[in-house]
Image 1 (cartoon, rainbow, N blue to C red):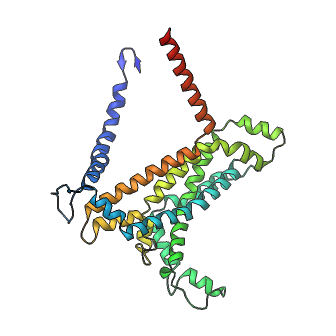
Image 2 (cartoon, helix red, strand yellow; image 1 turned 60 degrees about the vertical axis):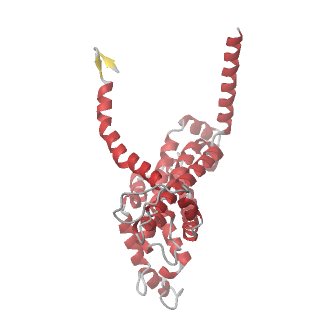
Image 3 (spheres, rainbow, N blue to C red; image 1 turned 90 degrees about the horizontal axis):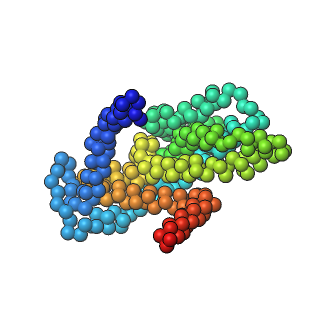
Amino acid sequence: MRQKGINYAKYGYLFSIPFVLTFLIFSLYPTIYTVLIGFTDLRGLGRTDFTFLKNPLQNFHLILNNATFKRSLGNTLLIWMMNFIPQILLALLLTAWFTTRRYKVKAQGVFKVLIYMPNIITAATIAILFNSLFGYPKGPVNDMLMHLGILDAPSNFHLQKWTARGVVAFIQFWMWYGNSMIVLIAGVLGIDPTLFEAAEIDGASAPQIFFRITLPRLRTILLYVLITSMVGGLQMFDIPRLFLWGGPDNATLTSSLFIYNQAFSGSYLYNRAAAASMIIFLIIVVLSIAMFRLLRDKGEAKQRRQEKERLKALRKAGVAQ
């Protein structure tokens, strides 16, 4: 932007310098270094020297054939699906409830704050809370189930694999469904309100308006929520580690927790931890591309292809002339 001969663009570059420096030092350099040591023999606490392996893919081969890594990856995908499916369904339901023009929900701000609040509570606090709720032999859940006659004696939920997975999945769902709801509501507010008014005049019901107008126009927002949730789910670390440290019997061991254990416990296998990180990164990239292609607007994509073909034809015609 120029005004009276003064170049204001330089101030934008100056203000961006702190971010650029922080990114280069604390994000870009560690990322490049992680990729690099994945092809080396670097291991051991405090060691900085390393040599490249004769077989550069040796660490990747070892990780891909590691039974614990395969189990951690399966646990990660399972726990993510267990929390994401109810998360997106409840977020869509709350979005429809808050944005419908017929119900006119009162005190929406209070409800939204209460629903979003679990997202701002620290993971350590939530992990300690649920660890106490499912405590053995005394804990609120055990006391309630015994009082209702469902249990005759206290149950050690921490030793039950599916219960542990269910609790971790529920914590992730409880923490993030409010965030998904806020994003979806923002998407609904961006839809042209005249579409809703015309549908109401035509006598469309609230479910018809939601499924025929709202949901199709939330495709891009749903794609964003799905990909960000998937990335967060594959990087799930704090709750599984703080809740049961990956137990019982590695039932809640996630891929991020596996990488942490490889790098900071035992033999400090930094090279294998780096290789596992890159494998998870590639999985995220492949799944993101697949979801993008699956949920993209096919009509819009077809229209873009036709426009490109038309421009190519015009260029050829101009060259021929």
